Image (cartoon, rainbow, N blue to C red; front, side, top):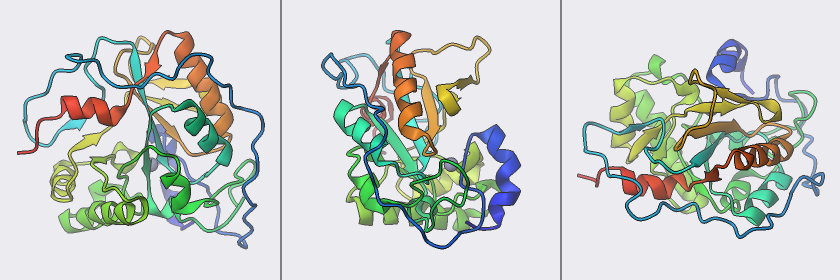
Length: 273
Ligand SMILES: [Zn+2]
């Protein structure tokens, strides 16, 4: 990785972004292998994650939409997973088997990472699958820039280079152009909204709570509870399959199911003008 990570690192704790830390080692990439038994097949039919008719009221157009949660009364939350460094085949299998509707916001640099376990213990699948890994997840792949910069430090053209560049890259590799944008570190300004709109994005998506190791949920609300429509932020970091399974159980135990963010936003977002 590049030196900038060392500088950005203190911000990662606050902003819930994560990346491998050290410089690239010799390119030793372990082949994908079956992950530890971490999947628990669901005994019940997989919910579709689609909104019910009339569940979500369309918002009025008032500038470029910025979404932190989805207005619904239903006990549904949305899982979003960022960056894309650790490309664990065990995680991909769980997502496919259970049909859990996640939304992925990868950066090009994470997806195309070269290297292996430089970041220390547990980082086994850095860059192991590349774009095919993300395409084969069978979920929405959305926009999180090319290189994960703090966009507030960049002017319009540089912000557009990051956002439009990522949109083109995703379209080329995944076959579908992204429509949602998430700013790295949750850091953005009004220029970001202009850039995202000019790059063809329909909305900027932030989050309500981030998920840490062991599926611990770090809430941004004082009552420390899940709420209908919450958007949860996870990262592709080890042990992803294990933490994801744990999180799914935890959320389900609390009586929530998982919504398809794209389908909900299709109902919520103003029609393109
Ligand atoms: Zn990120």
